[in-house]
Amino acid sequence: MEKKVDGAWKDRAEQEKKKAEEKARREAGTREPPSASFAMLLEAYAYQAEIGFGDVEDPKGGRIERDLSIAKFAIDMLGIIEEKTKGNLTSAEESVLRSLLQNLRLRYLDAIRGEEDSGGDEAPTE
Image (cartoon, helix red, strand yellow):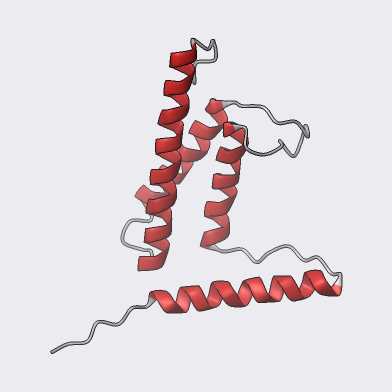
């Protein structure tokens, strides 16, 4: 009988290590940018979607504004990443990307329905 080996633990261990290093830097008062990674790429687009949904301040303007075209662009970019990386991701990376996209797409659909129900003038651009 063959054993199945879950390689996702390596990814989780690496992420925990990075978080611990960042926490140590913050406590020491130094601030280095996070190291580039696939997870950071996904987080960057997820953050853009959050800005578009009006969840967080726009870092440029410092205001919270809802602009679903920004959210849609970020979701579409994540969809392209999913398509172009198919077969090249670890199971953990694939799972995170799939889950992130599913949640953002559902949220976008809910936002569109909410605007249609309220008769909002802001129609998302396609």
